Image (tube, rainbow, N blue to C red):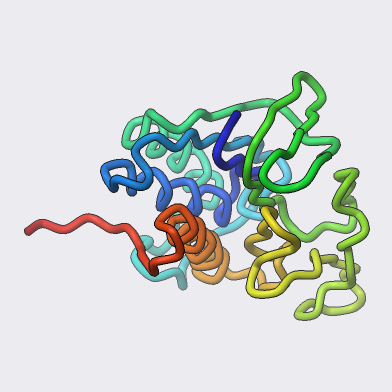
Length: 201
């Protein structure tokens, strides 16, 4: 049983995982089991070139960021379970006991974070009732999002990045994932507001 499973290894999903991973030493997070499906082939970053993203050198390729994020997660927070090369097909159950079915296996989790992009090919059974047209994308692009209230789709299920209705900007997607991570950390901290970051002090 995972405490949280993140679906999607793009910007928003990885950002969520990194922030959750960085909270490992907090008393309310030390025993939490975190997993992430790191499938990235459909990420919008595969063809991206960055010249306007804060903190990222101009000319950086999105594919380079994707590859580096997996390495960073594995090296810095090895307690997080990375699940590569699996596609989520169906989610069943209610909080705090969801069953996640992939093309290869079945997993249990108390919380779910979905961040797999806003393409209209979205097809995860159990979430289709929440699909609506993307509210911040051109109608001609036929993008979709999951209906949510401040990232919360329904109890125990969060959505991040463009699938949450945000515009396709690296900084926005990363911030969306980080925001949900801090919401989850606050939940684990008995509702007391919290966040996680490192310091040189």
